[in-house]
Length: 127
Image (tube, rainbow, N blue to C red; front, side, top):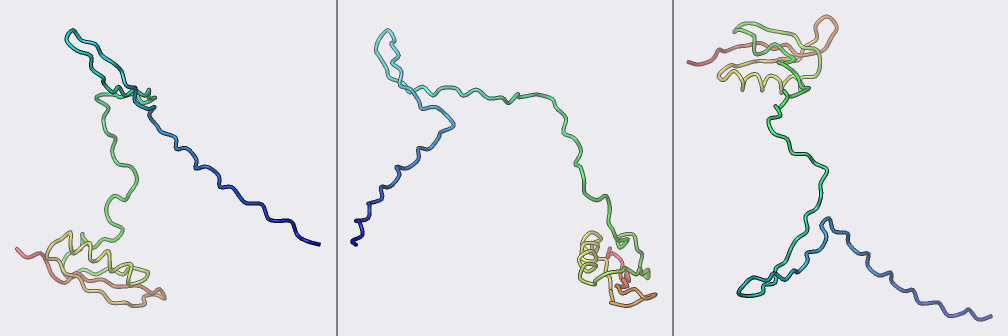
């Protein structure tokens, strides 16, 4: 048996794009001296209500202060922080940046069966 010839597929026409604004209209305007053709864009109605004098509320969320006490430490103080050294390192760097000239040293250690990092404040701000 012979197979019937395959039908040609026809391409679907491209979909029309929807526009947010209706198309502009050309309007003839007659004045005393001449007739002009102007393009008039229709106004689109909106459900938005513009208001004046509405106060901006305070920012929500976030953390007030630091999780670690590094900024409150004085030279010679130290603190043990449970956890990985990499997480504590970024907090130490932020504290050094906030207290310009302050220096910190840290060492990974185990204390009371918990692994973590001990951080010392070694130098004060330079005047």
